[in-house]
Length: 239
Image (cartoon, rainbow, N blue to C red; front, side):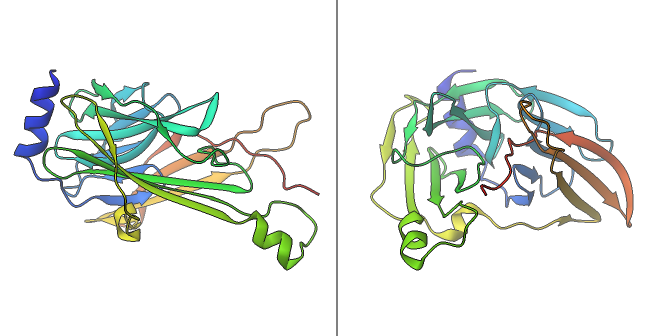
């Protein structure tokens, strides 16, 4: 698909009201599709059956949905303070484009690690894709810190980037994103309810620890299907 056609898709269809039912998980307002973070990339799932429709391995996390375009992102393992946006066709999962790296302060970290937090969201304004992000650090030691140490450990940075899908050009906006731009969670869509549980793994010396994340979809209080999602690296709090 050409980038010109992608622009036409964004302009022709207004972005729906997103329903974030959990971290990295969005349900379509009509209750037919679910987009989420799977073990191998961003997934599209049929809500009624739990059937996997497609998976895109170019994106590892979800940022939003705009019309017929699913917007995900992926981190750079060598540069944890950067991430790239990946646009996907909502019907086929095909990658439409991948942006250049979006840079944050050197101390920022996109990974879910103790002492760091990161969130991002994306939407279309009709012709362009708007990406907002927020990175924080906080005290992650075990011992109770002094007020001075705790204050020094707290840092925050936010940003907003506009991406032109026809050229891939990015423009940094000089503004602070509104909290509402990141979306709010609602675990119900129509007669469906969503439960996402994260289980901390047992400690095994020398073995990377990854949480187990499970999504359960319920109807009338009864589970209709369950699926394992992508887990997060985990390490015990520092002593």
